[in-house]
Length: 250
Ligand SMILES: Nc1ncnc2c1ncn2[C@@H]1O[C@H](COP(=O)(O)OP(=O)(O)O)[C@@H](O)[C@H]1O
Ligand SMILES: [Mg+2]
Image 1 (cartoon, rainbow, N blue to C red):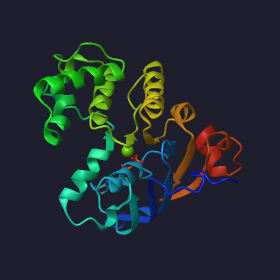
Image 2 (image 1 turned 90 degrees about the horizontal axis):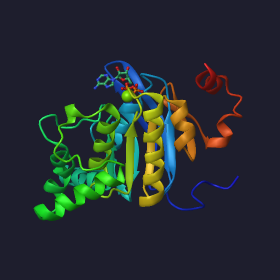
Image 3 (image 1 turned 120 degrees about the horizontal axis):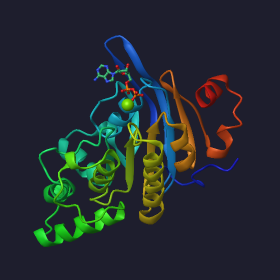
Image 4 (image 1 turned 120 degrees about the vertical axis):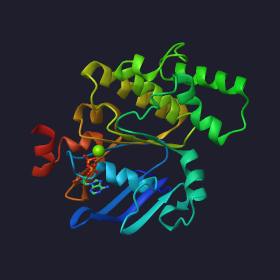
């Protein structure tokens, strides 16, 4: 079989990543590679360690062992906060609960990373916020507060903030949780659109199989702390592994 990266180096790779909390092993040796511009969905049941794994990629949780490389940086060897900060400009993270700042309007939420990391003027930032809103399918809602928005709109605003720094990689933590099926489908379409239009490499962790079928180029499955399989989307349905079948068909 042809390798998914056509011989190229992965843009993100994890090797033997482990994490135990107290005496509870959560990750027991994660091996996973992502190639530029692909959309990978990491499936796993609730409590299987999806969020813990994503957290190790962005430095919110330090793995006990293993190696993580992202965009040619050995992030497991990072010594300083500034190394992580530089990485965070290139790796966007969409948190499960959207994590908008409740006390800030939409404009200030989206402008936040631009205020912190760039020297753009107020006018340039405003223009950029407008473009980002339209990119996620929203109109002129800069002055609205997060509490005035539906769950789907909050997700879009959070996504606009996530892509504000034009990251090369976006990590999505359960992007459809709490949304109705129709809204979930529009978020799935948006994830795909951003991947194609902006050339973003996506890693989507979810237990939502419908989402996986809409956005994945390849699917990986997390089970008992390890990656059980990594296959092109069309192959997962053919898997005869009972653990995969149980997950897909219940
Ligand atoms: N900071 C933490 N301290 C202790 N246990 C944790 C911590 N974060 C996650 N866990 C545990 O790790 C397991 C996996 O959690 P998580 O990655 O959040 O699962 P999910 O796949 O649903 O995202 C759970 O049993 C959870 O209780
Ligand atoms: Mg989670």
